[in-house]
Picture (spheres, rainbow, N blue to C red):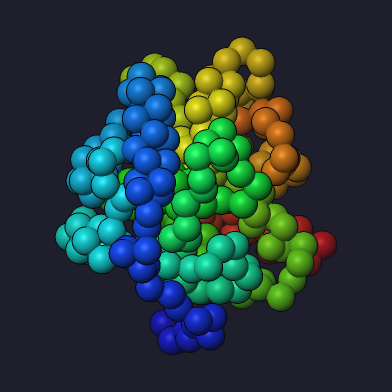
Length: 249
């Protein structure tokens, strides 16, 4: 594989800069959401949460979490300042590094923030970085995206795949529909809404996802349900084929 180089400045988590309010925010969000998740989230997430030893009383420390991830799948958390350019994002995934912010919302923003903070990035995403098939799916997405990184249409198509899986995906588990997407996992409102009868629940279909717009500022109108993370991984060749076809048509 050709080596890739990250030109975006890399950050380090400054753990001693977290204030008592930050710890209170993490504890409040963790305790509220873990109660919501116990009956609704995939077991893979709960297993991952246990493996990386997240708790309500302590904000995760990236260096310690990375030690545990290294033992599990070899992935790592990379601290970033916020939303980063598409190229940097997919290059990090290609190096098995998941970008995550270090900052936490304040107590007045418990229910909503415009930009994803550490609770979304770390609580929402990181536990599933212990699952090998899910990680291979993320890695595969980077392999598909990087050759098209300067093609705006192709990256929009990749965004749709990412949005309806990694961020807002649902999964079948022992006959029940569970959540796994980080945008749902980190939101108490979206957790309840996504599993309600109000939105559509559709079987995961690559073609349909690629032709589906998504909403960043309101609840989704539809969610796609996979049978397993293995299904996601095995869909990678179809995703690549269909994106290539749409880009070159």
